[in-house]
Image (tube, rainbow, N blue to C red; front, side, top):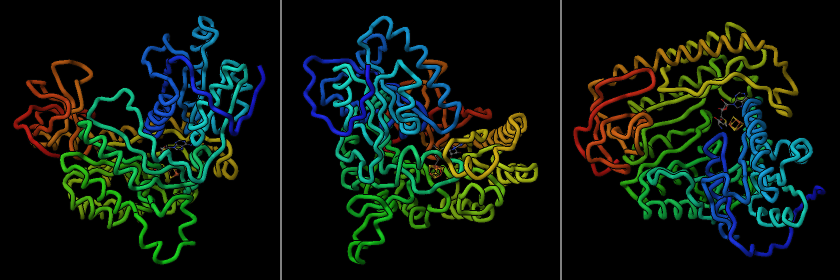
Length: 475
Ligand code: SAM
Ligand code: SF4
């Protein structure tokens, strides 16, 4: 078989229905993209299946954020070899960040793979699949300055029928030195606000009770007619005044259905504004929760990371959020062992976590990513065992904070949106509070989609357990 690089090809519609099995890894954005892919392919005769063995096409939507994320996918591909042995017509495709990062070399390294498609080329999938059926291997990894899949109505996959993701922007212009995202997802561009509102209305009509607005840096959202954000400066004052920023978008979305909760992720500390925080306070259905990755507690490391804020500035931002929204849930991302990190830098990270008391954190060892600024400029000089030990200290610090914060929640009442059954028992339900804490309680006659007030009776580092004291009819 030959490798064919396709930019545009004629599409001829599929003649018989085919089964698509799609698997997603990594961030929420990938899961949301897979729903767009399912929709594009549904228009072209593909039905999604949850049974891998029934698939004519298996697509893996991949993550490149850390090396272990990529290794996991390589491992998964080995397993797919036996599927291909059983069905030689099976088409296997790699989508997303790994496809974009490795491009044609992925086809060379993984002989099993028929298609490689980057995050901005999903509309081309029907053509690429057709090319494979014609005996070629195909690839499209062209990044776009405009593509937002704005008008595509995603097919909800593995849905609980209660919560849904809505993508509001793509790409990232931040260039944090450790991060591969700007290379795999391209320049930042925002999606048409009207199309976002339309999608939220559709979800409301379908009975969904919560949407999470998604982007790598949602506070930087700016709709001014389309295209890369850097073009905004070229507009006239009148045109600029007509633009829609994140605060305005949040308000437009909150007004769609006051019984629907609104969340968003991720906020970059340098971009979240008072205007956004005050919008959050004005609408009770916008959840009191902000995910605000710090990455490090050392200003020296933050500078090397190109995060554009200092330790003190980050403290100021968290304090401002708590001043405007007392009790607001705040979570964090922390990287252990970034280039040149000393024990003193690490201690500053621990003290930041102790002082700011995040509700929870996602914590990672630094993983050097080829092509990033850090990989080009700084040595990855913290030995693995030191990174690992520091990460354990970071996790222990967060656990101690979480345990105490959860203990303090005992005896208090939280409004919960029920999302489904608890993992451990069908006699228990689980949901999340406004502040994004997971709460478990006996099922009784309640069901997913209900709002209930739960009295917390027991807690641990990771969980809150209680009982319903009243049903509610709004967030
Ligand atoms: N856009 C979001 C932001 O800036 O907060 C984060 C996006 S990234 C998908 C999620 C998290 O992965 C980051 O906040 C960071 O903590 C972590 N991450 C990114 N690159 C990493 C790397 N090279 N090694 C370890 N962790 C990394
Ligand atoms: Fe990566 Fe930084 Fe952009 Fe987040 S803001 S996606 S960490 S470059």
